[in-house]
Structure formats: structure tokens, C-alpha cells
Length: 265
Length: 265
Image: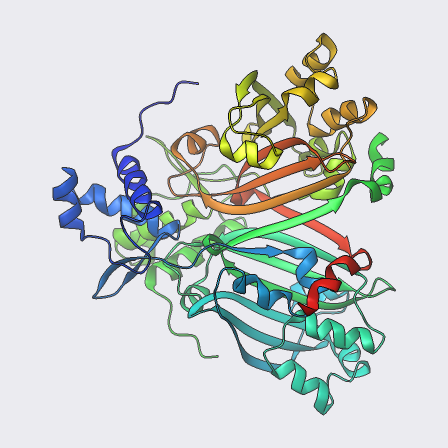
């Protein structure tokens, strides 16, 4: 296939990307200013500005107001879905594999009325009471994820999550895995997980909380845990800077006869 | 949490988004011009332009050169990973559930040397021969996906994919499911699948092939099929406009003891 010529700003963006990937511009280092780049590369400042915009959206550089443009330093983190929910400490280990220090900030635990989205996922009515836990996760000092977990009120109560020990667990920096282990010991352990993954532009509030540029995409995961009776015991909404993550899923083809049977409709 | 005020262009973007979602602006209809919107909403043209840019990146509108800005009409399509590879016709059914007509364009089948990325995924050496099949998929007239499938040469040969019947299958518009069924009948059926999902900005060529705006994100899926001996029999690279898709994964927590055992390292 013959490629048509690339637009000039794309060529400049590719050249700057290569300089970042080969270490000419090091992580956390400033990128030369737009006038410097325009002069060095013999193109207009408008072209350099468009190229830098593309790199900002792609999560390769960030602008610090009044200071300049810097190379982002956090590498892509792999999130292995099956592994992370089978191991109470797995979420913490995701960043550690890359030498990053994880940190969780629990911003709120409270009783709220379920929104329509949460109610549909939990199989309850909108307005029914749920326990919500809002968290913000970091790798070193970089925010990597917003995680809002919702549990039906009666499940939380039945599992003792509203009593001192459970409440302490929720208010701690423990991940979903620890909460699932707690639920499992009390007869409400997850037997099945569902995830829906979409990509969208970060909202204003998300962009601030996750240190993103205008227009940067986020990955939005709706994670549902169901118990052995197929009842949802938790819904977690994860909002993650798209440039920071690699999602991994794996499954056996051998359990899929139930699906194959539908093929001749 | 008290929300700081939104920037003006975000407010305009949200208002236009609401008009699209509530049908004030209908699918395939033009959005009023920037001067018209600036006048109606009492803001500058620059603000309207920034708001429209955000909606373009988000995949809500598209610009047709010399004609104006139009509401995109294709709804989000759900891709159920386990289902789609368990059923030869599942990929076709993804769009049909929404009343869309699927179409596949097989742009090339050929023998090439494996790139490093493909070689690593297939467990072969870079430069080793592979069979590649490039396809472009549509729902109605909207391009929804680029799919490049790679098979190791000896597996393709052993399964008869290089003989007339197999070659015809590859050159047809049949999906991966049909290829897997063919491989399975000949002793090379997939027993296990792995997927890695990342999000990145579309390249120039991808943006053209997928009818995307500058800077729009794509979902990049590296899908690996392994046979019963854990040997990769196919690697497929999928590039999908992020705004068009919802990825669905589900799994049982009960097969995960193998993972849990690693938790005390």
C-alpha cells in the first residue's frame, strides 16, 4: 500500500516522539521551547505547536504552567484482570513491577443513594442505599486511577462491613482484593467478574484529579463482582489515564461451549 | 467535593453534547456553524471552535471538508471477547444487534517476514515467514476496525491454509472465528486466548482508513491464539476507533487458584 505523504506537523510529532523514545529528551526533562524547535527544524511555530498538542493528547509530554513542556516519565503499567482480582495484593504489585511505589488515597466512604448507572449494575432500584468508597491511586507521585466502589447496603451490612473492623478496612488503603477476601470469609465472596471497557475524554474534574491535559482520553472500566448466586456484590468504576495502562485479559477457549451453542440461530 | 467552575469551552461542549444526546441535533444532521453558535450562545468563535474540537476528539461529530460539521451516527458496538471467539459468526453479529450491516474488505493476503512485534507474539524469530491477512471492517458505511492477522508459515501450511480451500477462506470476508474453526478441524484449534489492550492516537494512515479526525484515540488489541500445546497459532492486531466500541470481558473467579497461590511472594 502506498502511503500518502504525512502532514508536516505529523512529521514533526513523529520526530519528537522518536527523540523521547530514544532518550534524546529524558523523562522529566524539559522539551526545547516552541521558538527553539521552530528554528532548529525550519518550520513555523504553529506547526510545532500542533505537533506538541498531539504529543500532549498522546500522554508523552505535559505542560507545566509558567514553566514549559516536560517529558512524562511514568511507563505503561500492565493491569492483568484475572490476576489482580485473584490476589489481595495484586493491584499494589502492578506498579511495583516497574519500580514504582504505589499509594492509595481513600477520599470518602459514605452511604449514598444509588445512581441509575450503579443501580442497573447492582440489580437494585435507583435511589436504594449503597456504600460508596472513593479512592485515588498513585504510582510514585503520578495519579494512575480513580476507583469508586459501590456495595449494596444489605450486602455490606450482612458481611459486617459497617461494623468497626469492616469500616476500618474500607477506610484503609486496601484494594478490592482485600475487600473481596473479607467478603469471601463472610459468605459473600465473588464467583464471577464482568468488565465493560470504554474510552472517553476526561471530564474537567477527572483531568484535574489525574493530572491530564485537555482532551486526553481515559479508560473507563465498569467492574462487576457477582457471588455464587449470581447476585452483584460490588460495582467498581475505574477511570484511568489511557496513556498509562495496558489491559491484559486471557481465557480458555475450552469453557466456551455454552457460547458456541448459540451460533446457529 | 466542591467542583471548581468549568472552563467556558467545556460548558459549551457539554451543552452541545446534551443537544446531540437528546436529539436536538439528529444523527447525520449538520451542527450549526461556528458563527451561528457563537451568536446564539453569546461566546466567542474561539470558544465554540475549542468546544467543537473536543467533540471531534470524543467522536461525537465529524467535519466534512467544505461542507460543515455533522453528528456522527454509529452507536457504540459491544465486543464480547469470549463470545466472539467461540462463535464463527459472532463478529458479524456485533453490529447486527444494533441494526447495522457488517461488511469486511480483505485488502491483502500474502507471505511476509515477521516484524519484531509479531515475532515476539508468535514465539518465532523476526524475519521468519508468516502469512498475513489485512482486513478492514465496516458497519453500514462506517469503518469500524482494521484487523491484521498473522499465522506462522508452518502452521498455515500444516493446516492446509496455503492450499486452494484454505486460501479461499483467508481471501474471503470470513472472520477469525471461521479461520479458527478451520484450524480446529485440522488439529490446530485454539485452546487459549490472550489480549493486550492499549489506547493511542491514530496514525495518519489509520486515521484515513478509519475516517477519524486528527488526534482521535484508537483501541489497539493484540490478540494471541494458542493451541493445546500452548503454541501461538495466530496473532491478530486490531485497531478500532475508541468512540465506536465497548469491550466486554467476563470470567469466573473459581479457576483462579493458580494465581492466588502466587500472592505470598
